[in-house]
Image (spheres, rainbow, N blue to C red):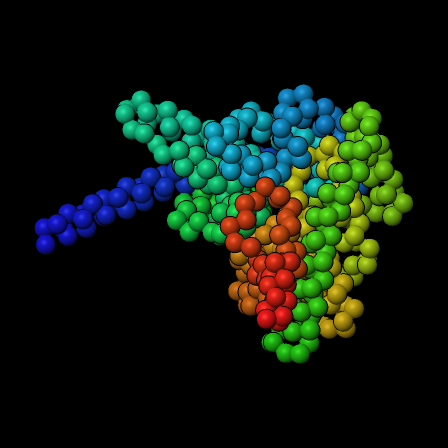
Length: 442
């Protein structure tokens, strides 16, 4: 009885210490992330507002991309594209270090890229900023504890980084639960570290609270989207949409890789590539006659979710411009372009099928394309519920997982470690087919 009491007391002490440790870490990381990422977003939005609609915006884009590339190569050459991909690489490498001043370069280059019309997202840069700050905080904590004779586990390094991603993602999209899930889900494919969900959520809520109250940031939610009862038309839209969203997510990944590989074979100065790429992106905007594909594209995403008419070419146009922007040296992320492709394609599919649920179709695509391409289906499903209401979870889950399986082992983040292979791709391997043939012969 005494032995059991000692074990029980020891377990309670460990759990209590763990709770205090990660509550404090989550709050501190969240507050710092909210301050810096919130400032990044405010600067980005003000730059976009200042340049929006002005003809010189696209005229200056080639120069902005060239300057962005110069700053990256000069001061932070490892931060190619300022993507979450860079953070995932660092998490999986032992003894890897983050350039703690690199977030300043990412801050500047992303504002230059998106503010002047380059097509990219804000979550990737924000995630790197949050990860950089939280890694620095983790190192400072380690040094402080060491000075008083306490050793911090090396495993805590990556958990600190994930807390920074959680806070950044929550601040960018105003979705603290999805932010916490995304940071944990995106590092591994088909594996989820449940033990760190609590501090990730704490970090997300803390960051969002600070950013909203310090900078008066506002977020758009869409509770008006009506979720129709499950019936033949809804199921048709979910299934056809899920398949199409998976194909588009795969196309996004493959076209981005194709663009990077093609430009890598063009043996000229990278600055010439950046300038020429900027000229091509600007000309595409001028030829199309609008700037729907440029910048973040949030106005078009909102229009798609409101059920407005979306041109058929919009999803493909966004894929092309985003791939080109990031391949020639622009700085930015991929999640917002994926939301653009998903929302616009969902809107279009609903109209082509002749169903009256256009906004609903856009919301399905918003979740499915991003969830499949990033291999983060749970986070995007929860994001849908936070943005559009809990009634969206069931149909969104169906569309997301159809698209998720179609994308297969591919990802916009190739450094994700595959813990468990997706079923569709596991059972259709060459070895499996050969074993079946051998069994038939016997």
